[in-house]
Length: 392
Picture (cartoon, rainbow, N blue to C red):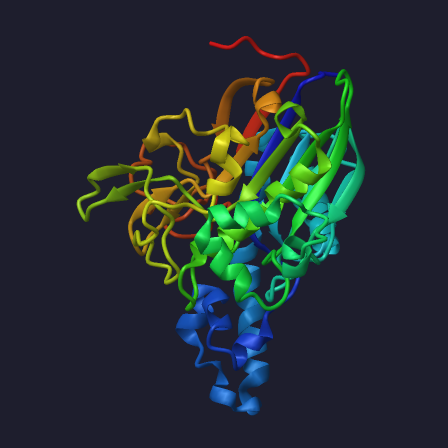
């Protein structure tokens, strides 16, 4: 049994075992329906006599599209060959168990995965973060979904560094001053794991930060607030976070560079660009800021994909703006970063053919122009050794 630890983060895109029949009357929810349903159905316009027809259309569309989608998701997970999978957009624990049994295990290459962790978060669509592991034991799991503004900012706070961090990031301070409810839009799932050959436990925090889409503005501040909360959790836990073994990973909906494509598929790299700002267009209105900044400031954490060439870091393609960005991150403490071995692996065989600049990437069977696909994100895998690696 290897003493190395392979960690994969992957937004599996709406791993559901349910239909969102709220879309029958909720215009915003309709954007998550299968495209064929949106094309063929009028959603009843509130006429309940049409609801049964709508349900049958949903079921037919799911049968037609979902099976290939999940086979591709399972192939991407298998290619990652990780010991610990940190997943985003999982419906619930039952959905995760069934998917693993009926799709991942059918491939027959990964062996036994006895450990599944999911705690319900706060997302209004019910998408949660989850973890699946083999050859390691999660000895501790904690949800931070209940973290509130008061926990971070009151004078007797259990998170003593939070106020200083908020003062450094005015966009986040503005968000917390006007916040109603909890800090994390989904959750920050904290795990402590033990791996054979390692002297100390490893802390992994799996996150899914506030999305870029929607109607509200300046979501960079919301993502910065979530990043501040994660950093405050780590600074509370460790007397010296730089020397501790921790990793923050997940779909952080933030990027620090973008590859834009013209209509003739000519790429243009804009390095160190800011997050898009709230309307889903990906336009750059953040004054050079990113939701990642609080986790990276002062060398607190190191983004392990940052050394890749700017045009190869991407993990997500947004067709509306024709750009590729790195929304999925593995940020490690300096001590943990020194244990990284080998190159970062970004698995792109499951991306649809509409993504420009991917002609040389082999695809899984039956991958389509837009769908089916493995996900709208790419899995990212990083490997660590129990021993420190030489500095190059």
